[in-house]
Amino acid sequence: MNIYIATELSVIEKKIIKINLNKHNVYFSNQISQQKPNKNFLKCEIVFGNIPADWVQQSSKIKWLQLASTGFAEYSDIKKNFLNKKVMVTNLKGFFAAQVAQTVLAGIFCFYRGINLFPLLKKEKKWIGEPLRKKLEILNNKNILFLGKGSINREVAKYLEPFNCKYSFIDSRTKNNIFYNKLKLAEIIICALPGTKNTNKLFNVKVLNYLSKNSILINVGRGNLIDENHLIKKLKNKSIKGAILDVTDNEPLKKNDPLWTCPNLILTQHTGGGYMDETKDKVYFFIDNFKRYFNGKSPLNIINPSRGY
Image (cartoon, rainbow, N blue to C red; front, side):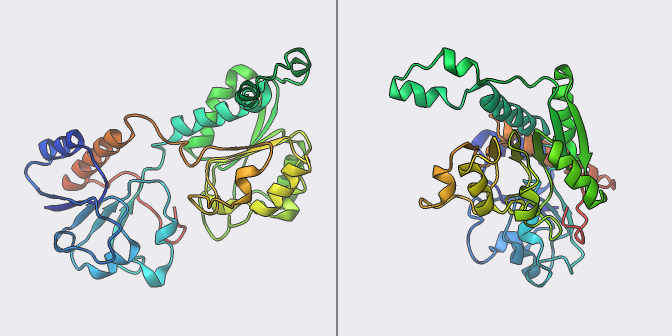
């Protein structure tokens, strides 16, 4: 089989692929931003990596695309991509759960234990000490609302078990009145929803106004979930305790984006799923999935194009 690798790999990672797929023709390319697909891509049945969506329309060979991400938003426009072609697409659903969950916990502790303040105080050589102690909180017994029942939120829930937190899960089937009532009570709201038409600006003005003054809003799903302009207003007015955004509507943020200077906001710059062996483990995931495909089994994490995840 002809396999096209459209993701940046180290020498060692390329060697891992060559050793494991030595009976197949493997073509490596790091130039996935180019406008036109190259000749090697056009002769491949299998692709590993996030290629430009319109490339697939230009290929008569491709049968399976293994994404190097969980997100699928760039491929959601039927007129511009391959959703009307018989191409199987798989993603990395569940791959980032532990990493993102730990980023969520780190962000929560920053707010509750004042960790976000100490680097600033150190820079200013300003000692607060005792007055700050009286403002610190603990995670125990907090009321937590999860938006999404996927692997990330399930992993966070596992980590929260020692803290005896009260939590509930919301999904697309939850009635609005239940959703709003739970929002009012929630002290921590964790969003790990996919980016679809139904979730676009889910946290609009109306929904954000249901948040309590003591709440922390966390988004580790997709950047289009939140009306950022209104969130900024609420943070500046101290209408909520804080927010943690691993994803934003525009990435990377422009220099003049108001999120940079917004108070009570932690920006983790879409690093929540990252760790030292991330790319190597993605390679192993692809190799294992390829072996399933080659042996006639269904690969893991097949995307439903009509839902976008």
